[in-house]
Image (spheres, rainbow, N blue to C red):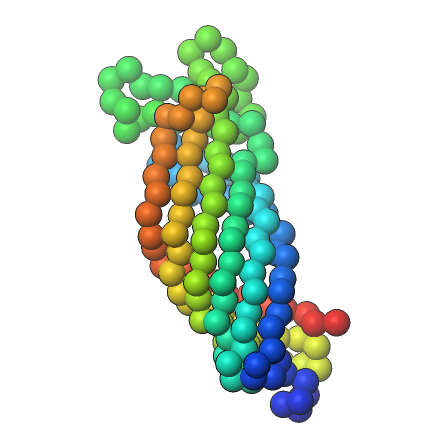
Length: 154
């Protein structure tokens, strides 16, 4: 096990760019192939050897073509599908989202260069879904931000 001298020391900063890919869970999607990609930039200030305050900004978008259709009867039955063919009754949808994040971070060293970490905090989010540059769904607000992960430090 590595010694405390190898942990981030109090009074130090880390600046990180994180690139990730994942799926979203949206009421209108019929499958799990609704991929998104995001880029996050954040700065950690370590106020104790394993504890940090984190400030970050995250931006993301969809990475697959989403073909969506509207239900004439009930808007709750609108749907989107990945890989479907577009026709006169459907439209292509795009998703863009961003988050401003403030969190507390805890690092636990598991080997010389390997760490597990957890984050818990708050976020301000903004997202919109568009149909040929016309916004048909959007939301902004605040919420809980959490993350659990693994870090390898060179």
